[in-house]
Length: 284
Image (spheres, rainbow, N blue to C red):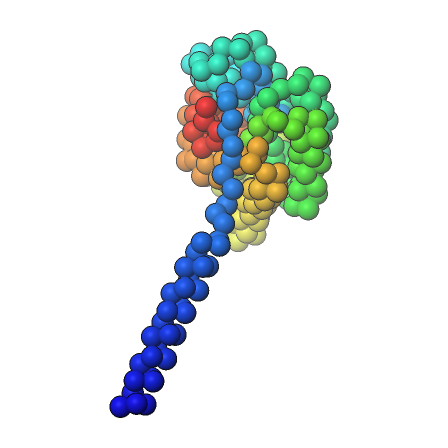
C-alpha cells in the first residue's frame, strides 16, 4: 500500500506539473501583434503600378486615377479615400496617387520618397504584378530582390513618416487571370497582340506539361512575393497591415477585367479592390 500511495502521489505531482507547464506556455505565448489603426488619417498616398493608376478603367489605354481603388474619387468605386473621407472630412483633397503604370518593386523606394514629401498619414502599396508578369518566366524578379525592394521602400516610409499607417495589399492571383480568360477569343487575342504577361499567358490553350508546369511556377512566384509582403509588414510593426492574401484569394471574373486588354481591372474590378482589402485592413 505504501508503494501504491507513493506512486499515486508521484502521478498527481506529474499531472500538476504538466498542467502548470501548459498554462505557463499558454500565458507566455504572445499572439501576433495586431495592426494599430489609430484615428482615420487626414491624408493618404497610393504606391504601385497601373492597377493603382486605374489604367484602362475609363478609357483606351489611359490612366484613370479617379477610378483608383485607393485614392480615386469616383463615387461608384467607393475607394479607400472616399471611405475614409466619410468618417474624416479633413482628408478631402489630400489624396495623392504616386503610382506609375509599368512600375515594379524596384520603383517603390522612389514612390515612397514622394509619399514622405507629401507628409501623408496613410499609404497603400500594391506592387508585384509586373515583377511576375514579364516577357518570359526567366525575366521575373527574383524573390530575394523583390523583398529587398519592399524593405527599402518600407524603411524609407518608416523613417520619413513614423506615424503613418502602411497597408500592403497582396498581389492578385495571375493564374486566375489565365483561368478566366483562356476560353475567350478576345482575351487570347489581346494577350498575344499586346504581349501581356507572357510568363503566364503564353500559349494559353496549351495543356502540355511544360506549359502547365510553367504556369504553376509563375503562380508560386506570386505566392512567394505575398509571403515576403506578410513578413516585411510583420517586421515593420503595428503601424503596418497586410491584407492576409484577401486580394490574392478573391475569385475575380472575366467581367471585372478591362475589355481592351483583359488584364487590368475595369471599374467593377476597381470596386472589388476598394472593398475587399479595405475590409481586411485598418478599416476606419
